[in-house]
Each structure stands twice: as C-alpha cells, then as structure tokens.
Image (cartoon, rainbow, N blue to C red):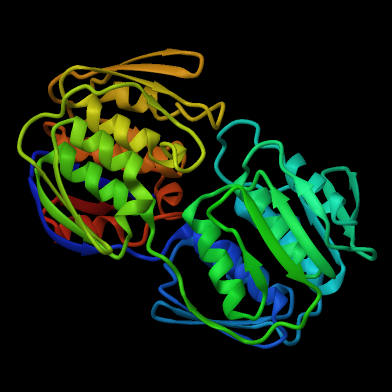
Length: 417
C-alpha cells in the first residue's frame, strides 16, 4: 500500500488548470443511458469513481471508451437493468443509475450503494421522488427492484434539497410523458451542468440552479457532445493548500462564482484573492487567522465537501474558528488524524472548535474518506517536518494526479511504497 510523503514548508506558486468535476460527470455519465446513440464527453477526470461508473455502463451493454480526457459512451445496445452488488458498493453515486434505467428501460434492479462512510445517508428521498412519478419499488434484503410501467410527469416536492435525489428525479422525468416539476430542488452548479447536458441531448428542461426544476419528458433523445464543468471542490483544495503553505497560485477552469462561500472565508482568514472568468488567484504570506463560524449548508451555502479542507488549513494558523456540520453526521473523522499533527480541535456533536496552533507538525496519518484525505494533504503542506498520508484510494476517488499537480506548484510531495 503506497502513501504520500510530504515535507511541509514549501511555498506554492504557479498556475494549475483544474480537472473536470467528479460530482458533475457521474450523473452525466448515467444520463448517457437515456440516449440510444453515442455521446461524447470532454474534460472527464481520470478518477476511480469514474472508472467504476464506466464499468457499470459496460456491464449494462454500453460501449464506453476513454481517450485522454474524452469519454465516448454508446448506449444503443443497452441490454441490462440490473447492477451487481460488487459494483454498487464501490461508490455511493451509483444510485444515480436508478432514474436513468427507469426512464430508458422501465426497470432497475440494484443493491444499496457504497462509497465514503460519512454516517447515515438514506436514499429515501430518491425513492419517494421516483414513486411520486409512478415507479413501483420493492425493497428486500438490501436490494431495490424498481418497475416504472406507469411513469407520468407530475409535481413532486423534496423535503430537503438533496443533490442526488434532484438528479435522479431529473433523469427519471426524462422518461415520463408530460411535465415534471421538482419543488425544493438542490441548486448546486453540478445540477446546472446536468441540465445543460440534457438540453444538448434534446430534453426540454429548465430551472436548474433554482428551487424549482421543470422537465418535459417522454420524447426521444439525440446523441450529444458536451464539456464537463471544472471541479470546484478540487479548486478549493488547491487554494486551501496554498493558504496553508503560503505562496501565490492561479487556479483556472472553474467559475469563481461557484466558490463564493469558500473564497469569502479565505479572504477573512488573511488571503488576498483576485478573480476573473474561470480563474482565481490566491496569495498568502502569513499564518491564517481565525474567522467567523463556518456552517455547512446546501448551495449557495458553505459546501460540506470543503469543510475538512478549510479546517486543515486553519488548524495550522492562529486564532479560533467554530465549524458546524449540518449535512452529514460523521464528517469529522479526519479530526483525530489532524490531532496527530498537533491540531487543537474540540468536538461537541455537530460542532468543532478549531484553535490554531501556529504550525502543525509532520506525522503518519491515514485518509478516512475522500475529503478527509485531501484535508490531511493540505495540513501537511503547511506543517513542519514530514507527513505520510496513507489510504490513498480514498483520495483517488476525487482527485486526478494530486501529487503531480502539487509538485508542479512547488510542493515537496511524492508517492512511496
């Protein structure tokens, strides 16, 4: 099992183009099932979650090929509606296939999904949305058998703005005759990206980015070519890395408007930021300062995916910051690992009080989940001495060549056996 070996204290500098968004490309790949033809996607990151998704597409009867950052999916010969348990367990996002298979084949059979262990993440909202559209769903012994013989467009309401449930409802609605209105929809930029792909394929869909999404379904779709948006959470990671290590970096390929909540925190902590269309420049020359409470919330609030990453940067700064995690129950698993590096973090339920210690120190730590692993890398960049970060399979779920990109910016990081 390999690990990252990182010697902290090297200021970062230079420019980096961020890869395509993990949280955007996975539902778009699932949406390719709706098209009885060939779709071409550009800016597709080379991540383990993407590879697992392509494996699922192939098992279902699709052709799925990659050349560089371009992936071609031909779902003309889609022949199966069931996904084996071993593939479902590789990632949580695999539940997104429910809506697409129901819309295209009228049936889906799969087990409960796997992925990062971030506490209970019930898919009840997904299932209730699909039932509202007319699907019959049987749950037994960890499996879901869904039949969509009477799918029909109608108004449905989500009790909370779940990203996954919004995406599943949008995909299922493509196979529902009539107009589907999704009230209480998630507003994340990745939802907008899915909408734009569906539009490219001929779907009449609007409202993404607002609490109400409208889909007129039941019409044939056409082959589409589309470029996936840049990964805003990866961009936040590199910015927080530069804030922890000091230096000046330019991040391109991401709209800064999608990261406003994170950029405001970094500026308050003492960083200087300049933004332009699809670019952000961060400069930091002093230890970060404590900031006002950071409370995770659905978009446009502070993203839960960036909570651990910002916490790691502030833990090596000065002053205190209160974090409140409102999305997941178990998203502080990285805290014990940061404590190994000297972090002063006190937990109380959903709250974490971070008291900056001036500078963290190197230690042997392990990734607990995708963003927790990235947080440890951020902490190591600013720490004194050498840190070894293990369990890299978590990090590879959402970051393409993280070590290589950081080396290009001047970090002392390498992967060792």
